[in-house]
Image (cartoon, rainbow, N blue to C red; front, side, top):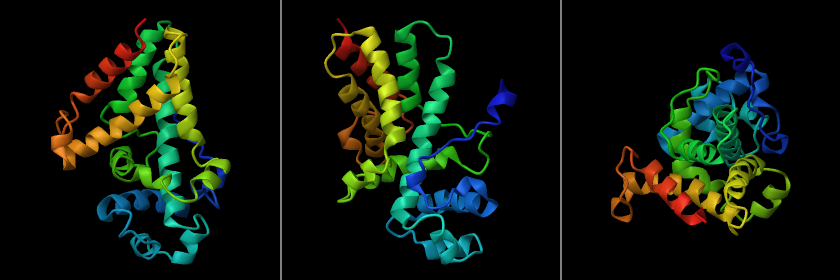
Length: 225
């Protein structure tokens, strides 16, 4: 199975880039060092000029792949959600109990990340820090509706629907499966951010050890019949 998984490519929607960065070594360098530099500087201070210097290239080369740092951020966030879906699909394969599948889904949304060597140019632990700190900036923009029509958020919506379908399987009468799942996905990141920077707003420790328990409790209490 591991050999089969090694051939899997995380596919990001085509509208989220100009040229597929996975198709060339330079493109993969843009992704690899883009992640490291955004994590180091924050999105506001990050520029394509600084990235070009880091990868010993030119800004023009980067602009052939992404027309702005917002598009690059959207690509990274989309890759992350697709990667979580990839993990979820294999984690729940052949598990009959929807309750157990839902617990696994919550664990994947809230759990600490270990780097996945199937994707050597992507540091998933660093990417998660970007998702926690920066992901809201991918959609809290004036262009959100246009970006949505172009498919920028399909990966996130697809993952949430997959988990919401499990909620519906457990309790078909529950009225808010999509609302609940998107709340859990966002809360997983906000609570980690609060623990690091605004600790009076959360009871979660910086290591996030209680987060899965909290979210699991919230979900199952909400959907109990």
